[in-house]
Image (cartoon, rainbow, N blue to C red):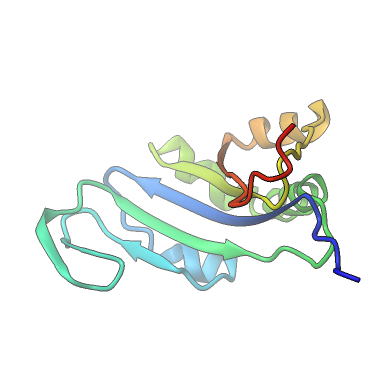
Length: 147
């Protein structure tokens, strides 16, 4: 018997940007290792560190966020907002000085159809912290389940 895949899976990452300030302090303040980071004015490079023309026009810092096995997207986002609220004293001045904070959500369909709901309460908690939710939805490779 073939094991049935769940209809979807997801990955999360935290992204901070700033037009003028470097973001080196994010790693220590948030306790996460960045997947990628750069500072405004540094020479541009590809994700593989190959040189690119020009310099970065902003500072950027991103780190993956853990997703627990069997956790729904809604459960992951609820856990993440609880954690981010403990870092509000760091995130608020970052935003007030022109920076941005976002949660990137990669939503991967493993079947033809899947969905999620974002309840008002957790959405308002993200909004209070000024955090953008950025969704990328990736379709299933096999559309044999299409109606």
